[in-house]
Image (cartoon, rainbow, N blue to C red; front, side):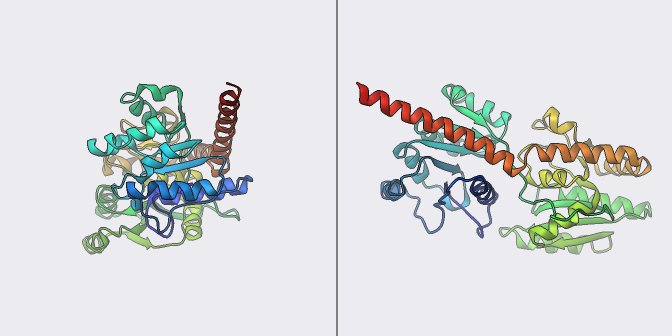
Length: 344
């Protein structure tokens, strides 16, 4: 497994890689991760490829992009040098033109490409049509697990969870708290999150501006602590500027823990995801939806169950199983190609 970042480095793709490696190991796959203290420049790629080849891997799997890669082209070169190779491309539709052009070596070098949603696959095929028959879709999973012990839904706060940084929807959550205060409602918002290392002062700005509002801040909790809070919660408000989508791991974490969730609909919201959420375009509409759910417990329970079912389909054991199936097919095809060449 080749990754540009890996815990403790702050990077969502690094966290994804760690969870996948853990799940693959649990399923019986021997995983060696190449991520730390590596120079990813193009000139060092052959040296790194020799090092990886010496371990005689059955499969080389590259996760791209990643914070640690920077703008270096070593990963692209590895996809051309190492066989059999599969590359998972994360959030390709969000990258700028120059970065998109830099992805073409993967499209030529890797035997298989993995995308994290149908949207990402279809978007990429528009620019590289030959990938249509060489691509698979395997969704991401939640970085937050379910508590090992069952929890009662005894937390009445409206929760919101995610990285604290601009344009992630946190401003709408604070606006909801302002409406709750203005209407003198007996409700409280609980914001669970971590600080963006690139904007550490942003949290201070938000807390200062919202000091008089009914908000509890749970910042820097451990994974088990976050899981415990979510498992005890009944309602979440998770607005996103571009709408709910399958690439939102924070939304998956809330769903997996069976929390009835109000979010925003967008171009990336699939029908399956839409069936597990309630939608509100504004904080005012979200507050109305929350009132309705609290007045109808059966509707609240139904939405929570749909969310849980959606999250369970994206559990890490299931994701690992999909990867193993793909690896086995790749190995079979690779061996067949070797035998065919030897027979000529």
